Length: 115
Length: 117
Image (cartoon, rainbow over all chains, first blue to last red; front, side, top):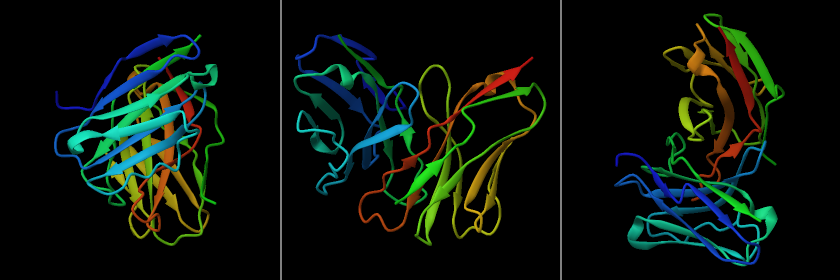
């Protein structure tokens, strides 16, 4: 498709289980972001990939969270040993560059519910 | 520290009227960019408009315009001729030039806009 694609759109899991969320950015976009949006909150930055540079992981809330981006395209966000406070919508965005005025294109998000 | 403040949790407007959504920001940087995004109930974030700190003109995109007052550090979004489809959450965000390789956006908590028929 032409836009940012995220899967799954909804995920319900039990506390303690691991989950993987996938993001397929727009073809050719070198920058990829993961954000988390909790109910009634703004977007919380998690991690940023730009080309072949080392990712900025400064927003990851704990070492249970990790992300990788293979071949400069698809990214996977992994949450290990999920906790109830991990319940949120996880949004992926991509842009052509990391330029100041670079518009971010968002996917529709993956809604994670941890029981 | 950088911060975005949106003081209006919820707003109502009559269809076809104009509405202003407030956004103030805090940064010590001289070069930065301001964004507005719309998030309908479907959840996708939709880019609306961008204003650079050195842009002399207020940005406009169709029915959207940005009332940029640099000295007051405000970047209010004005939606003219509101439509029912404008009902959504609206987020103000900022990105600064001095973030090195990290171009992450700092986000406000959003304003929920309801357009009444």
